[in-house]
Length: 381
Image 1 (tube, one colour):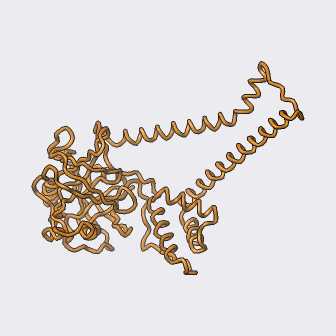
Image 2 (cartoon, rainbow, N blue to C red):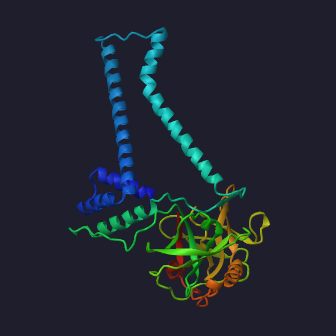
Image 3 (cartoon, helix red, strand yellow):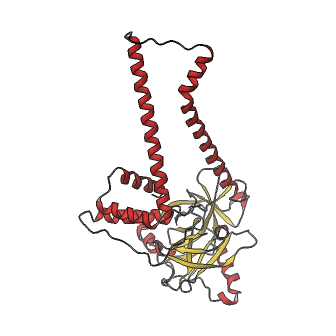
C-alpha cells in the first residue's frame, strides 16, 4: 500500500476525484512535507509527459490517415523518397521514437544496475539474501496518507478536515526490519545483527500504532555466527508492556512443526505461516533451522512461533535460487545472547520474561492480537 497508494492518491488529486476533505488534507501534507511534495511533483510531471506523448502520437496518426486518404482520392501526390532523402525522411519520422526508446533503455539499465548493486551490498553470503528493506524515507509519509484518507473516507459526511499533529518528529529512516520483545519489564528487544549494522547514526523502534521510540544496541554478535542483536528502548515516552504472551523455547523445533510469523515487510504488520522443513540451515548450519514459507525484505528479525505459542526462531534470510526456503536462527541462541548481556554492568537487569504460554489453545486470530504489541519495526539512518 506504499508506493501504490501514493500514485493512486496523486492520480485522484490530479483527476479531481478526491473529496473536499481529502483534498484539503492532501494539500496540507504537501505544504508541510517537502519529500512528499517532491514525490507529487515528480508524479505530476510523469503523468503530464505521458499525456503529451500520447497526444502527439495520436495527432501524428491522424495526420498520416488524412494524408493517405487525400492521396488515395487523388488530391495530393505522395512521391517516394530515394537515396539519402529516404534515409533523412525516415530519420525525421522516427527520431523521437528512437530517442524515447533510448531513454527507456537507459532507465532500464540504471534500474538493473541499482538492483545488482543492492543485491551485492547485502553481504557476501553466496546464495543467501538478507531481509532488510531499504525504505528511502517515504514509508512514514505514505502510511500517514493512508491512515488519514481512510479516516476521511469513513467520515464522508463530515465537513471539517481532521488534522493529526504527531507527538514528536519522526526520523527519515533508510532501512526497515523487524524485532520483538524478550524482556517486557526492562524493554529489551531481539533482532538480527545485520539489521543493526545498517544503522550509521540513529536507531528507533516503531510499534504497530506508528509510534517511534529511541533504542540503543546493547549486544551485537561480533563473531557473526548467530546474527543476533539485542536492543533496549530508552525512550521516556515508551510505556512498558505486560509479560510476554509467548514463551521462548530452549530446545529445537520438530521437523514438520507448523509455525507462523509476524513482521514488517511493509509499513504495517504482516502475517505469514509455514512449517519447519529441515532441522538445520544453509549448508547444514546447526545455528539455524529451515522453514518452508515466504519472507520478503523487512522480515529480518521476525519471530517464528508454533501453534502452542512457543517462539522457536528468528527469521534472517532466504535462499535466492530456491522458492519457499527461509532460514531462521534457533531460539536457544537468544538465551546465550542474554547471558552475554548479563555480564555487562549497565544491562545486567535483562531477563527473558514470559507469562508461561498464554497463547496455547487460542484461535490464531486471538494469538496474533495478543502478540502484535510485542513486535516492532526496527528503523534507522
